[in-house]
Length: 340
Image: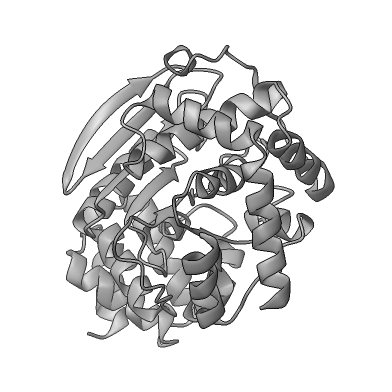
């Protein structure tokens, strides 16, 4: 379907069914739309308000165009902890540290991520600072997931067609529907997820989309304080997805047995600062950084089905850190990447 008629419908404030949104996104990814047209498309979606069907269609097209990672794991879940980012709170890289801890608990992790877009340090930046080489060969990434239990899916490498949308996104300099797509488009077909969202409205759109895409189990989370994590400063909205069904849950730090923190206690910084925070957590240092990592790891472990309750996940994650297993997992990931 030609792109312009779809754009004109959006400009008339008409919502698109998933199939038409998919066709529009496919045209963008194929380079069939100009930068001004893509800007108009994203702006029209934003002004009208994106629907779950539209987000679903965009995600389907992006999944189709991705370079897929065939890890061959079928007897266990494969987990992703990718969030949207962009909450502008300047915290440390919680989801990336969580991914290492969860992998140390025996859950295969396919961590989708990128360099920093709105903060000083993205997941790719942190992993590089921790000695992990960003793999570009799909076969090597698949081996890392299968043999080491952790693989980093560097978005620019595995979603090359997204380059056609980048000039428009840079021109607009504002959040658009595309900011939601990272957690919805894991190239390794993650079957369990912990996905952070920048708002409750976005969390609801993402949860409905992941359910429609067939996610077996996962949580989309948004903190009352604005964090796209399970926060430890306030309660958190959890949207629980289980085979198409979505339940709304509210949890507080006390439910995990940790004290409330302040945003200041969770602040990150530039790459070296966030590297030092990650290493401190993985070396067992107590405090607010450890607490928020263990809380999110416990939710991820429950999503993966290896913990039956959050308190059990807290115990598993804490043991992985305190035994040195999490730090060993990081070193194993780094060594594999350097030799791949």
